Amino acid sequence: MTGYILRRIGIAFVTLFFSTILIFAIIKLPPGDFVSYAISQSGGEGGLSSIADRMRQFYGLDKPAIEQYSRWIGGLVRGDLGYSFLYRQPVLKIVWNQMGWTVLITGLSMIFSWSIGSAIGIFSALKKYSFWDYLFTAFGFLGLSIPSFFLALIIIYMCISAGSVVTGGLFSPEYAVAPWSWARFLDLLKHIWIPIVAIGTAQMAQVIRIMRGNLLDVMNQPFIKTARAKGLSERKVIFKHAVRIAMNPLISLAGLSAPALVSGIVVTAVVLNLPVIGPTFIVALKSQDMYLAGGYLLLMVVLLLIGNILADILLAWSDPRIRFD
Image 1: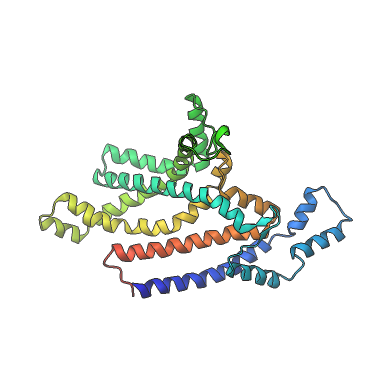
Image 2 (image 1 turned 90 degrees about the vertical axis):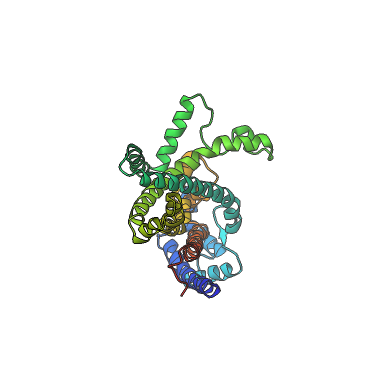
């Protein structure tokens, strides 16, 4: 087991290195740079070439691309993601300030979607072709077809129609900058369920469909018939044998879901005014703040690699048919 984990970590580091090359190439592809953006925003026209040259020299944008990449990758080794030109502070500080809320919202959304989606998928498979099965199937297709930001708008409209004052964000105006207290925590609970439901519904619909299909397929396998022939209770056959195997594709999906949820809540975060990192990434792309945009993309790669490693370990642990070698 230890050798398997070390091999996976080694592969992850190699993948991360080549990902940094691809990320840097992508953020350097658009024409212009942050200096061009800053001058255009200030309304400057021609005749500012000397100022632009001094700004590029100050930010290090006049260096060759290979030298800029070397400086960036050297900083990554030391835990430095670079310096944000737009916000004039280290990228790591910006990411750290917004990562807490990002992890909280995406984590709660995953718990919401996986727990409820798995339970509904199992129930739907056991009640195959019943009214409830058709109802949850319709819900699954509806959840997959409605964008999360549009669902968030529908939820806000329903809240306002019901007389609620919750219109977005994570706090009411009086608690936005207030110190933590029991009242502020309760106010957070009044707001945070909207992004959790809006973001998690589409993922939950996907989990329902996968769990239902996999469980129906596993229930027809020979080992299930053998378990029943041995006289095991139906409950033990389903939850100890069938569900355990049917969960494998969901475990693999979980490894891909963390970065997908973080990147997928960008529009929803803008609609709901959430203090997560997605909207900051959009601003970084517009302003060509290369180190901030690169830091966000690098974060997505790290989340994907960590998710895949954990998913592989869970698969090898949960299914005896999977070997480490």
